[in-house]
Length: 141
Image 1 (cartoon, rainbow, N blue to C red):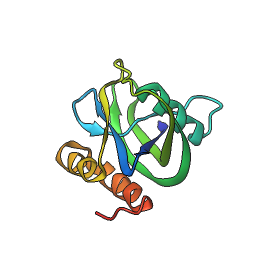
Image 2: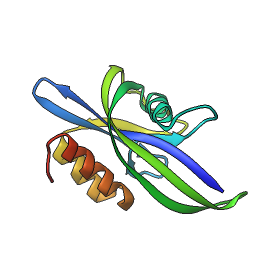
Image 3: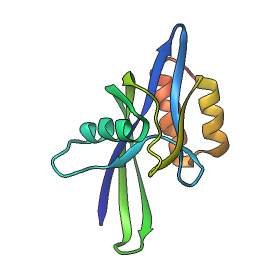
Image 4: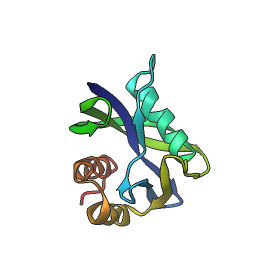
């Protein structure tokens, strides 16, 4: 079985300060807003919808970041091939509000704090995504 998801690294600028959005997932790990594609959606539409649903923030896609691939074991479907498309997304509207059914929390962080949190308690396969997003924003870790 194949499953396609999409999400993004969301950023905003407050005054002179660039901030990166990170979520805390239901397992307590630092992650990025993402979710499964629904019938009739493009991956870009999926990414923007999932970000709004999970975090309350609407935005616009600035650039694609990358696609990651992995497998996981599903109780009903067995081995699932997972494909996740990530985009750099500029926040445009909304108020931070975690979708408590899906995630534990969401917050904004300075780029160096976001990178440190990713390194400390994020998923290894997101290291490249966060680093690439920061690079697109002109920040080199």
